[in-house]
Length: 72
Image (cartoon, rainbow, N blue to C red; front, side, top):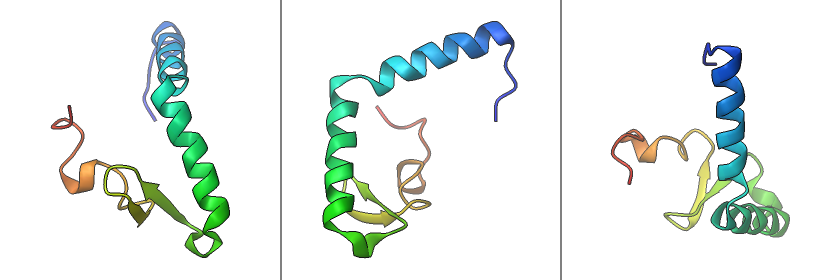
């Protein structure tokens, strides 16, 4: 959790919500929901949109171990 001032926290909340509502994110969320309903055996896993396969939640974070600073 980040320790932000109330003003910075409110600004971050607005930025995060705007990003979550982009067309790409909406498509990815809808796909993920359909995918999870079609693959109940993959409970506890996430679909990796970049690799196109199921991964654990832990493995699907941080650009496959390379960190997020190097991502475009």
